[in-house]
Length: 354
Image (cartoon, helix red, strand yellow):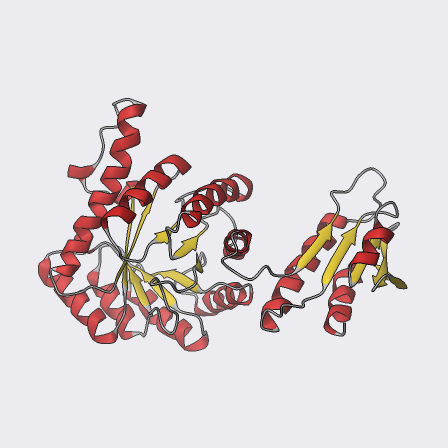
């Protein structure tokens, strides 16, 4: 359990993200956690580089509802302070927080508070004695990198298990699809600990989405993985949306709002890209706020009169673009003209009352 959220053991696959504002700015952290939660984020991770950040985390915990994970590196006191502040889980590598006495202290405190620990390994955190020789060829590295990631993870697992701590999850993230697949497949053969999936440093929105979707989609379809994060050089909210869509595409989450929107062409005279994105975001928030209803209305956002009226007949609520405005259809009937700036809010208003 991470807070009240089941994790592994056949529980639904969860979506994670990570705050990217100052770890000392409580108000900014609360806004970001709540924003991601409103989009369906199940777990949020916050970096804790010092004791002041641990205090801030405690205040964020009091003002938010989804489980929070403290990201710890090197200073075991930050882990202890985060546990004391009420964090729901830790992400750390026990081998880099000091000697056995420090590992014992963290394991004991985590066990007493029922705080699970995720061992998070990537190439940047592998111990020197396990680091592959990057001067060797690609064929060697294809095998050496996954082996090194898994060996490092299992070494850290043993450090905790030697202290009688077993509430452990693991991640072995690589920055490309091939190494990610090989590492997680190998790890799944060697442990039954819950696995957190991700492609680390996946990139900006488009390439990061593609790399993460390919790697995580393949692993999840093979039954590997209990929680995911899509690591993008972008807003955490984007990570949540992409992660949610990956799970929906595999049938691991309810399908969500049904939105038809056109790619636009030279006939378009309204900003369909902006309006469609606004409608999509607001529908997602409404869908979650209403408790994921199975009969959630189908919405269409079309750019011109060629396909718009036809799509309007098949959607409960539809927009058809004009010159800086949209025609608004409800159940196939034209009901009004709306200014571009009001289009998204008008769609939401009619969906609420449909």
